[in-house]
Length: 109
Image (tube, helix red, strand yellow):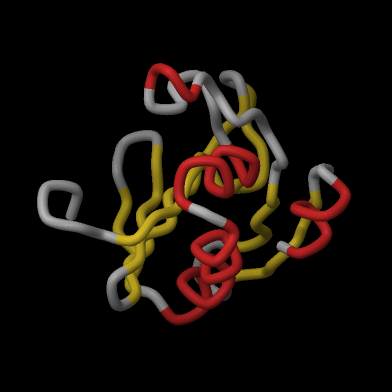
């Protein structure tokens, strides 16, 4: 995570989850702050919208969290945090990658 934040770069195979396989940290885009960061994704959006501290918690969430699967996303919940992983990138199959992560609050659990 630190490499993606500091170098503003993608980190392929940043983690390996026993049930999910390799997970990439794509740096992505912050999105539009005037529109609640819409259009953003990846580490850049997490840092811009939720702060670096939240971004730095995502590896622990991924390792220790409970996994649930949606149609196109995988959700991992640990304590008060959630990581959301995508199963493709722009419609193409790929390693799962961290789309967003946040501290769960009332209304977004």
